[in-house]
Image (tube, rainbow, N blue to C red; front, side):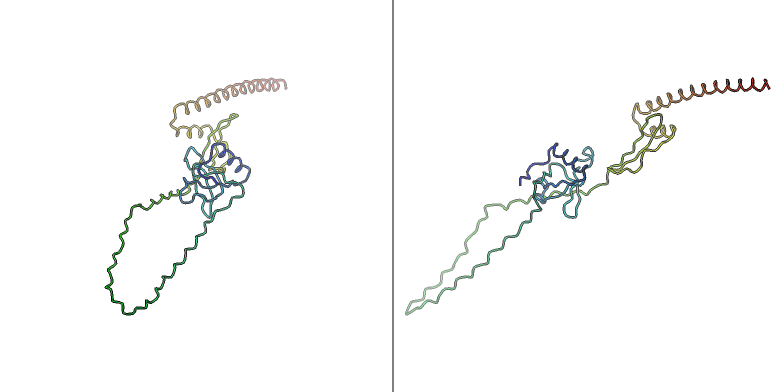
Length: 227
């Protein structure tokens, strides 16, 4: 299984489509993920990549943590979690017991002092690979939207993929107060222009209704005089 390369843009898009269809694609951790390389997990969510590079939320074991596309690769079909079985240590060999020497009138030779062999350490032990710190999963982003369409101002709120408040109608004055909190050139001017256009249309309609009402009242006066 080649887990050396991360997810490509097309693979991220395929995962996004699979999540939208209700599936949880399986991925394998690459060497960039540290000590969990080679393990298999399931993608359960894709957050906003503009907020953090680690926007792929993966569930493995009891953990649900975000990772970057470079830490993951698409798991081949049929791959399950890899378990490395420890190799049994070889049993130590019993030291050989020397047979007693049969000596007949052999002069004793003084035992020579054995010098311990000097062992020179030439190779340095391999450095341990730094384990990548796993960042805790933060709360999903919150989005509040102020919109104008068909002569009405609406406000909606959404956290991640969950809708907290469906679009509901607010008064133009409240919409203008909300926009006043956003210090962005051109936004408040655009809102004031929309409100000015609505005000002019309302005044024209009011003038028209007043004229029609005046005609009706004059007609009613004539009918009363004819009694």
